[in-house]
Structures are given as C-alpha cells and as structure tokens.
Amino acid sequence: MPQLAILIIVLALLSAALVAVVTLRPGTTATQSGRILVFIVLFLLPLFTLAMGVNAEIERSKSTKFCLSCHIMEPFGQSLKVDDPTYLAASHYQNHRVPKDEACYTCHTNYAMFGTFKAKLAGFRHVYAYYLTTPPAPEALRLREPFNNRECLHCHLGARSFEQGAMHNADAETLPAVKANKLSCVSSGCHETVHNIAHLKEQKLWSEGN
Amino acid sequence: MATKRALESRLKLAGVLLILGLLTESVCLLWGQPIAFVFLIGLGGLFVFAGIAVYLLAIASSPTERDQGSS
Image 1: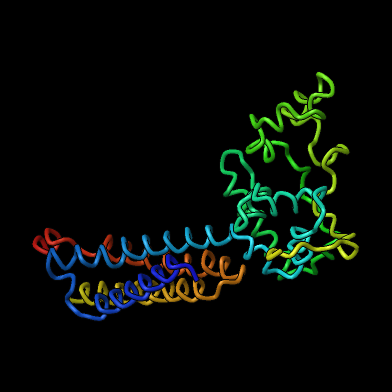
Image 2: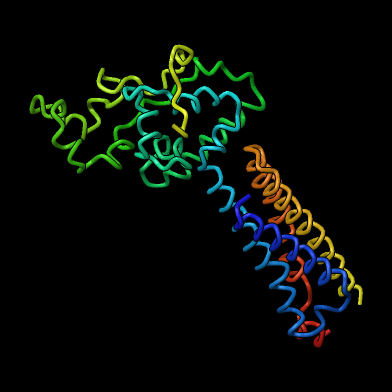
C-alpha cells in the first residue's frame, strides 16, 4: 500500500476522532474559539481528507495493477509480455515507451481537456458493466470509439523515429494524414497488431528476468 | 435553551454522518479493489457532504447573539 494512502487513512481516523470529541462535548460552540474549532473540524478537515482520498484513489486507478485486477483484463495484461516486437502494446511496455506502472492508462487515457476526468467516467462504466451486467468475453471487447491518433502523438509527435520514419515519409500525404487523425495509426494496416489476445495462446511470452 | 439543544443535536447528527463518511473513506483506501473507488465517491462522499450540509444548516438556522439579545 502506498505511503500516501496510509497517511490519508491515519488522517481520516484522526479527523473522525476529532469530530466525535467536538460533537459529543456539550457547549463547544459557546465561545468564539470553540465555534472556529467546530468549523475546522466539521467543515475544513473532512473536506480536505475526502479530497485527499479521492485524489489518492484517482492516482491508484491509473496503475497497471489496478486495471489488471479485473480478471476480464488478464489476457490484455499477458499481451504486454508477448515476445514479438510487432505487438504494439508489448513493444511499448517492454521497451519502457510507456511507464510500466501506468501502462494501460498512458495509452488509453484521453489527452484532451478533462481527459483524465473522461477516462475515469469511462472507468465507472467498466465497473458498472463488470459488476452489474454480464461482461463480454475478453476477445469480444472493443473500444467504445476508434483510437484517436492524438493519444499516440502525445509522445511520438516531434520524435525523430516518427517524423523521419521511412514508412511515414513514403509519400507526401501519409504524415499529414496521421497528424490530422485521418489515417489511423492502429487500424489502417500499419500498426494493427496491438493486443491481439485472440492469438495469445500461440505466442511465446517474455519473462522479465531474462 | 431549546434552540441551543436543537443546535447541539444537529451538530451531533452532522458528526455521525461525517464519522461514517471518514470511516468509509478509510475502508475504501484499505480495500484496494476497483469497486472501492465507487464506494469512496458514492458512499463516503455522500456521507461527508450530508454531514457538512447538516452542519451548515445548523449554524445558519441557529439564532445569533444579537437575535438572542433582542428577544
């Protein structure tokens, strides 16, 4: 458990104890300083503790471990370890092109305004689907909307391998079309093998120690 | 005297709600499953905001010292 979470738990328990002391003691509001204390303990402290807790949960929800804790996501987690450089997600994960601890979030968030908020809203839909409906088989999972090149360009735009890559510059139209999201990075025949979990069993998996 | 008692009982209610919210938050942070996030926001947040609302209502509806002096 992260140290921040432990700290917030201690803060929440301490706040709860203070709330109990302040509200159970009669006459706390009789004096001016007592009223200020009540305001701090019943208003500022709980709000601050809740904000810290929500922030810690949002940070935790970005972790690879968090995403893979739903068993429907297990094959997607395994696909990060496929020993084949043509697997886009695996090559990003294994070569540290994405932070290992936030591998899913880095590619599947939305790098637009309020992107993290939208990603978390989508996460709530996942939780709803997982707990309250019959979730589809992992192989049947599809993205809600086509993958936007913006998420790739967030890192690759301006990189030499992207800007001067031979295939990207094979003709004059490709690079501008990719940058304008008119030619998809992942579904136009270029980087199409992303997770490809339907063929996971046929693949050799890379073990991190070797 | 009666209004003072009413204020204290409202503060106690606010306190109970806030304690429930803060305890829910602690449990959710300890739990560590994705559903804990939903409980933290849906239940913990609800309790904390309800507690704060009851507290604000209590101080807004309690008579001021000037009111008490004029009556």
